[in-house]
Image: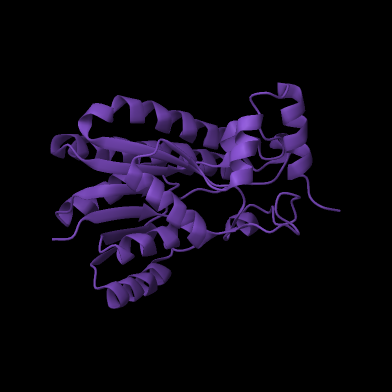
Length: 260
């Protein structure tokens, strides 16, 4: 019997590529995102190509207790999720004072609350079975404050800190927790965040979603605590420890501004 992975945000980008990585390795996949039609297409592709079982569970994960609803559906299917990938999340490029509150509220709910609830719900059975791997998608944004995307950067700092902490707590239970920290990546994220004109991405050669997912998959399977994709991203994440905080924040703002 195949093992089972659950991937959120599986309809595109890094989440879709994670689903493909699991399928390539003969691991059944629970696909979670809002777009049911797209998930059904992906489910058919993975089942046909790799001979695995796929489960489509469409929902809006920014809604309260959406994770609990997915958990109940997983239990009805009598599945044990051995691999949990919390990939769903979004950002927004705007001054905090001018940002739409409902969008910020949804961002906090999805990037923090839903991710945390998924971990809390699934880790219980992992502890009972003494095995399991969790991967939470953070970002290189987790390593410094980010003016113009203040809530997004802060949410990813939470994901990193939370993941490292529970990885330590669960180390004697046969469970590992990996925080994947990609830099800018080719996906729908930047368009959805109204940040495609940001200096972070415009005119830059940025990583492909498939490369980031493969890197994250391998790090997860090795039980690595923090996985920063790309040599330059690793260098930049390390360098912030040695640069005055005020300068780090100023540079982050400069890099996030839209290109003129």
